[in-house]
Length: 459
Ligand code: AMP
Ligand code: ZN
Image 1 (cartoon, protein in one colour):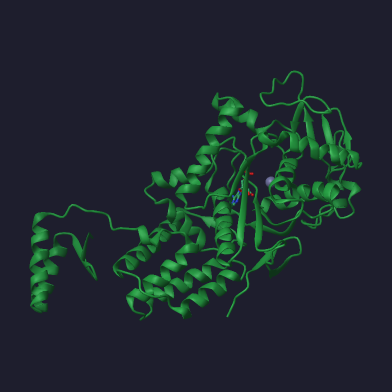
Image 2: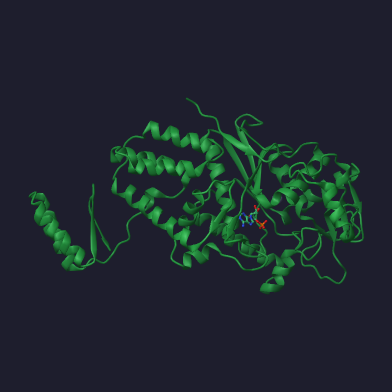
């Protein structure tokens, strides 16, 4: 029975079947990080979700073109198009140039993705490499009458679109009423910058010439311009974190709708936040946890990946050290079980079908993980369990097959006891074997019997 992949589209607020717009190809665009600082584990939750999406789409038999951009200019400190460019602020904080910090944090971000087993996207692109595309996009919007100029930049006139804000179901009038006093030269609260002029006294490190004067592009235009370049004017899936719904993605849609007449993507998918107790992680406050922080505390990066698999991408997930520790314990149990099963044989059809059912039901990874645990506890032969779990791991990405028990220094006394136990077992003297096991455990080691012989571990 062929199963169909269904996903929740934020635009229509419905779960529906993913059908490629063209042939067997799926274009997937994911908003990348603003590289003025390290990414935090909240950001990484979103990239893990997008990786699971990528793997699932490939699993369903489609060819994925996965694009991730790098925002290395134009993301202002405030969403209201005021405040400084985050890159320039980052440059002052670190003493590096804006170009240097972009390179430094991009490479730190890519290292994190590798550690988390996140598949390399098909295309990396960065905003500063696509300034011409962005200018051309704005010129087109200007020719169609969607822009106006103020003393600090070129703005998108959001009222020219009847359904501006549909993605977020924005209450436009309510927003305008609340913001009237702080509008500055902006005509309407939801208007946003397409191009900002460099201020004469500002000494910006990143600026370019344009038909409107020297300056830099706004944040939203980069994603409309780059996604069009690599995936076309209307492609299959656009995703990012939930915070992007009311502003960034709303504005990407507005620009593309005005210029190309499409809603940019057939599906809009959003990952919910990873939260620290009652507050969200904030990169700009500087107070956040990095993957490196977890590693320093002795956790494998894939423990964090496992931690994320336990929650559906459309529910918030609270981070605590206690729950990370529980994820560590579970993952180790999974690794040890799989290791003890020896070589894989064939896949259990029954378990596999159930796994795929959950996966294709809007990426229900918690349910898929529960099927894996049922399998672990089942009476299926070890070879079947191993083969089936390894097949699940094509999606989980936990590197189950690569895991090996830690090499521990086993004292001579323990190894000779172990040899005695083996002899006792060979001659089926179970009492003697048990006694030796007790002696070994008094010395601080436990024994687990596997197909490849006994595994000895410190208690
Ligand atoms: P930024 O660098 O702020 O543009 O964020 C990069 C990605 O991480 C975007 O897709 C955001 O929506 C997402 N994101 C930001 N904070 C969190 C969080 N606490 N939990 C999950 N995703 C987040
Ligand atoms: Zn974006």
